[in-house]
Image 1 (spheres, rainbow, N blue to C red):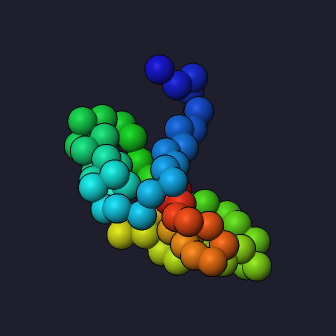
Image 2 (cartoon, rainbow, N blue to C red):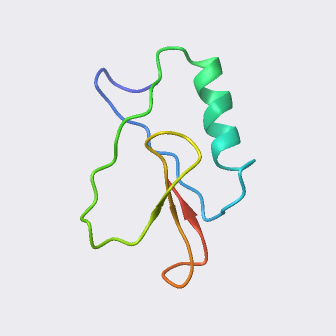
Length: 68
């Protein structure tokens, strides 16, 4: 239901693989036109790569847990 060229951002306040990468993987399997794209953040933003390309994890002490 996105307009052409639109973007959907999936974000949770969880660090569990099931709620994050698992949901994204299921969505990508169900919607073959969807794709992951890189997220440009300033280098000063403390985060780690997620378990899928172009996903990010933010954890303590900055947050209690965040996935993009």
